[in-house]
Image (cartoon, rainbow, N blue to C red; front, side, top):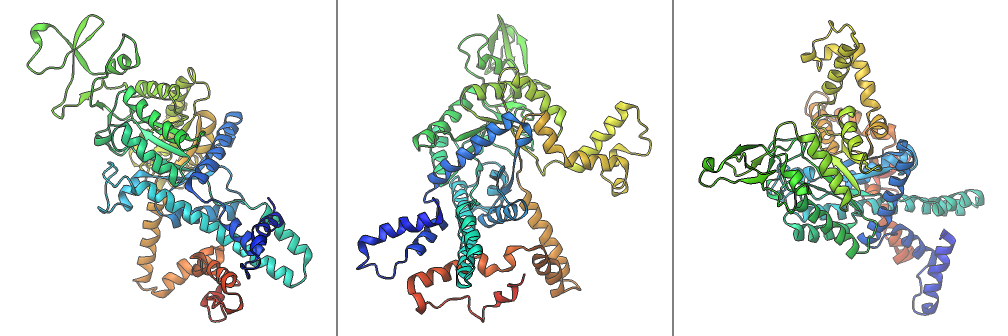
Length: 532
């Protein structure tokens, strides 16, 4: 519906009450409706699920159409990312937001900073989803408000060409509201708890929920030790719970990301119940670290399983956890992924210990032998030392090619001494093209960084503190922050506008007309940045 059609629609709603609704302007109503396109989280979830489905189909047609996101821990951070994306690229297409459980635990819990072990309040995650979309909707309202002001100015100047151009921009406006991939950890309890929490996610606006196959009450960060997985049927029950939540709320094309931590998880809490030889539970159990025993060797309290006519004792630790055989991680990952895709998941997440296209692609190729269109969401994690990993990969490639590596010490490749070397330059090029190459060669549909702004906030704060509290004083802020905002066109330099002051002024004018007491007058110091 065009801007003029919106005005006509509003006028039709006002017309029957024109005797009592004096002062209600149809164009003002149309503007407010355009600035508040999404009324509920379910509106957002349905809208963004359709975007993800289209993007997944586009990737299937051409892996160059991979998508990306950055992790967020506050609505303002997510808002600024999307404002920056629109500013630099003109479109939000293929760019999402990622909601990291790690960052919720570390930064949003009432308990204070927590490790990534599902100890934070489960309600803090849907609350952050709602917060992110509140800020994204405000970004729409702010940008559209600026267009409306420009339109009024063009009309006042009698510039019909400019007026028409601005109306065309309004008619084709692209929202800041994009899909969020939301981390539900291991489901925060049993399948019923997962279902209830998933509904809160979806009602807040999430079109995509990521769930992992770890034991909920033993949950660990994917890049730490001590991970414990659950048997397949337990995990599938939670995937089904999420799907039921989507369907109950009418988000029929909601997206589920099934994450496997099996590559780095050497433990399981329970032995899977086998219905018949060779079923998925039997395959899960086949990776257990066992020893063959006879009846005389069975001790008090031992757990024994029967397999292929043999009595086997799984290795059980003092923690009462059972251990998998070393070297079975990749096989277990492949089995996890195939079974998840066969039972309701849409996308996969394989948590790895390093960013290695060959390793990831090897597993994906095995999965695609069974599920040809299998595709991944991949964590470009700050837990990886990207510089060291890729320099080591190039070093190893040089060795394999028979190239002279005597100028390099593999153990010291992180050193600044190597920054200008041929090896380091090639490693940086591989990092630069990693996402593109992995999309084409390893089936990665979506690349994300889980906690980038955790690190950027720390880095920028460190730099500011060093300057401001040191010899530079106020110049440390002006030169390092404000002047850069002005030079780079960062909208936040006008922080009152970003916080909604101009939107409020527009509403005051709608409500009170000439009597409105507006904040954006001649004495507003934000006018100092008008030229910026």
